[in-house]
Each structure stands twice: as C-alpha cells, then as structure tokens.
Length: 320
Ligand SMILES: Nc1nc2c(c(=O)[nH]1)N[C@H]1C(S)=C(S)[C@@H](COP(=O)(O)O)O[C@H]1N2
Ligand SMILES: [Mo]
Image (cartoon, rainbow, N blue to C red; front, top):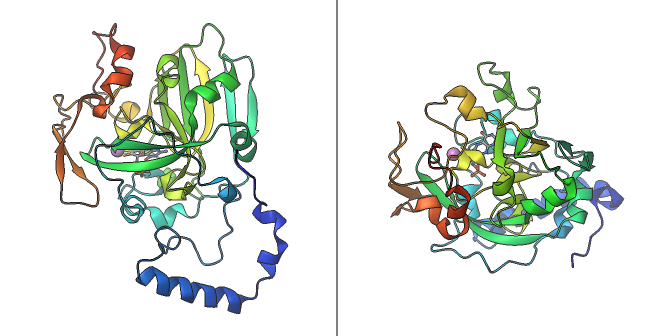
C-alpha cells in the first residue's frame, strides 16, 4: 500500500522557510553532490525554489520483478540530460527548457467509444491506480538506447477505467498544446499537438505501461511529466509524453511522425534490427552513458510477450 504523504500545498511551513535556510541547504546539497553522494536529488535540474511535485510521497513503489534487464540501468545523470521532447526543441538538451512546463493542475481526458468518459485529475488517477516499478529497455529509432526504472501502472488498468465499447479498436493519445510554455510548438510546420496511437490489443498487452515516475521519484519534466506512455518493444517515438487526452476510436490514429513523413515513420514502429531506417541502420545501438554498442533485438528483446499481437498482420509495415 502507498501511504499518501502530505501534499506540498498542505505544508505552509515550506513557504515560510527563510531564504537563508534554503541557501544553506543548497550549499550542503551542492557539496554532497560533488562527492557523488546524492544521486538523483540534485542534478541541478530543479530551480532553487521550485514547488515540490505533490505526488512525491507516492514513490518509490514496489518493483515488479517480472521484468528484468540484460544490461545495467542507465544512470539518471545521462537519461535526464539527453532527451527527445520536440515541444521544447529539436536538440537533446531540452531539460532546462522543459522545467517551464506546469504539471499542476493537470487533467487527462478519456473520451470516444467508452462507457466512462471523464476528465480526471492526475492526483485522483494516481490514487486509483496500482503503482509499481518496472525495469525496461528503451530503443530510439536514432539507434541509441537506455534502460530505465519506470514507475506507474499497466495501461490495461486505465483501459479498464475507461470501459471500451465493442466497436473501439484504437487508442489515440495526445500531448498538451501550449506554445507559450513549449517554444517548439511555435514552429508551425510541425503538426502539433504530438499524437500517437496503439491498437486496443497492444494497449492491453502486459508490457504496455503508463509512467508517472522514474528512478523512484515523480517523472521529471523532461521525461514527459506528469504522465507518459511506455511501449518498450516499439521505437521510442511511440512513447508519447505529457498526455492530456486518450480517445478510444474505430479509426487508426495518424501519429505526429507519420503525419510528417509517412514513408519513414509508420503506425506500428516495432523494433527490428533487420529493417533499416533511411537514416539509421537498426542492427545495433549505442548504450547511453557508455562506450558500448549492442546488437539490437527483434521487438527490442520483448518478442515473447508481443510477437503474438502481429501474427495475422503480415501485410502491414510492422517495423517502421
Ligand atoms: N510529446 C512528445 N513525446 C515524445 C517525444 C516528443 O518529441 N514529444 N519524443 C519521443 C522520442 S523520439 C523518444 S526516443 C522518447 C524519449 O524519451 P526520453 O527523453 O524520456 O528518453 O520520447 C518520445 N516521446
Ligand atoms: Mo526517439
């Protein structure tokens, strides 16, 4: 069971803390971080007086040991400072810009062909869902990879909450749209907001996960706070960040990248080392934070769990 700690807005003493105390604490933290003793707390990412994430008390959550890795977890210092989040820029160092994102209040709309349409606040959703930690590989189509301890819940649980009707075949996910915060969204040649999709069958596969935390803490903003998709057998662009809407539909959604370049990015995007992308051979991958390269595995190593989803889809472009 998760014991809910007090939320930050219930802690007036935090606001009342004299600046000198804060400064002193920061100096101590800086010193400790230098000694390597504070993995994950500092990282220099949080602005000095940032409000703490109100879900912080929920983490860490118990690890589900079903999901194991064939490599070390990539240290947070690398995954937190090398991100794809085009809303904040097309380069990898978007983490400072992403701190502009306001993650409370935050609601997620569930709509379309479901019995329980609703707009649910992120903290109400977190309180309803069975949180767990899973170690997953992540493979970007740009041929780099990482291994990450996500916290969150099975997407199947959210599907259950929505109650899909018999005609629903697909889930369409949408990221927030706010160019005043995300300067990348001022670039009008991109089809904002970012959209992704899954079949209902994929969404209820045991691997499909919704991440609300990582490294035993709430998701930092650059990972797609406060709620993102994680589908580790597919190329990373399918794992859409900062979700505000999930629509259940009978029409296959057209994703952000598919809209931009459908000859290079398709709906399925399952990892396959023997199907090269026009710009990146997919046979091997660079492990983020190391000098190591590894051979890429079919379905990113998750063939056993997901191959069955595609057995009758031979005519589809499953690997792009
Ligand atoms: N909304 C949104 N989601 C997104 C992206 C993005 O640009 N915008 N990039 C995708 C890509 S290409 C990858 S590899 C992963 C990167 O996740 P990470 O930055 O947490 O490692 O997020 C995916 N989700
Ligand atoms: Mo990616």
